[in-house]
Amino acid sequence: MNQETLKMSAKERQREAVMRRYKSGKILLKEAAWEMRVSVRQAIRIKQKFEAEGTEGLIHRARDIPSNRGYSEEFRSKVLEIYRDSYDDFGPTLASEKMLEREGIEMNHETLRRWLIKTKLWQVGTKGRVHRTKRERRERFGELIQIDGSDHAWFEERGEKAMLMVMIDDATGKIMLHMAKEETTDAALIVLKKWTEKYGVPAAIYADKRTVYFTEEYVLNHDRRDDPAVFTRFMRVTDRLGIEMIPAHSAPAKGRVERANSMLQDRLVKELRLRGINTIDEANAMLDAFAEEINRKFAKVPTRQADAHRSAPHGKTQWEYFFCYEETRKVQKDNTVVYKKEYWQILKQEGGPRPGAKVTLRSPLSGVTPYWLLGEKRLKVQYLGRAKPRRA
Image (spheres, one colour):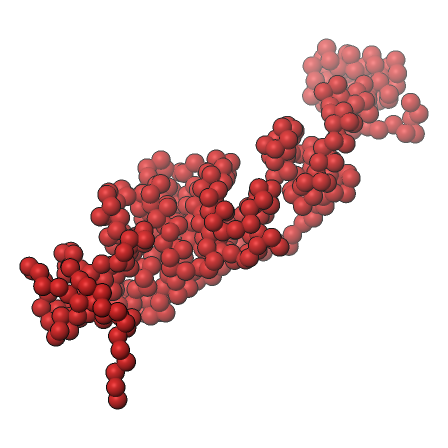
């Protein structure tokens, strides 16, 4: 090995300097051992190599020699070919996970990252940083849930754009997903119902100041926050469940769910592509299992083990009561009620409402046919059809 082309690490250069000081008599061997952070016996071996071979004796013998445990060039070429064919826009971590899952190829994602960078299949860059103040996670699972809709080309060019409804727990990062055409009250309630069925009723929900979740009067007028008249249809459900609603005043305030959206726009899009899924219905059929896998990989252990969720509703009647839309109407003199220009005749029955009484139309989220109530008593009614326009 030519001295002009020697490759030495910082530790090896430091040992060379110490050995030269020892050789010139400036320090004792035990002092040299202390400076090199080795035992005296190890220092003797280093001295002997230095005396016999000079600087070359200080260089590690395995330098520039491939490891016996390293991957073969054939294996490396195979992995890179698979990456080019199937995962060319995947990050190294996700690509290594999918290669194990689909091709049965097990390898460290950092090794794959080095290979991809060396072959210029992956670029390393730094993003501009914005200074923010850290907000600590809530301590208990279910103490605060963030909800948001992520509008994205989930099926790329294979299908229509869709809205992914995302719920994420602030303490653990666990997620629940549902896909719909738009961010509607129905879509928001479906993902909340799925969360409640699996985990229970959360203590609070943090959401955008969108009309789906809050009315303008509720956000701006703090004195009316206990007034059901300023509640959205979504808030009427959360009010029955006893869930506190908290409006978010900026996108950074919803950092937890925004970061989840960003991660899903990478991982879920690629998962849908790999599975050949092109429709909302097909996506919803796999989203629960996909969310479970994400939770298994990324969910955190909460600071406190106590669960902040309350018990979920029990039985069909309770689920219909908590997850429903309700509209109140007045009984007319002819014992009819009108809703959206449609007439219902209230039939003669024991305990029926008198004209002028208020009755409620309940429309359960589960797809059950809507029905009229007096208090909690279900009324016998007959559908009469659409109302005729009044004459001037």
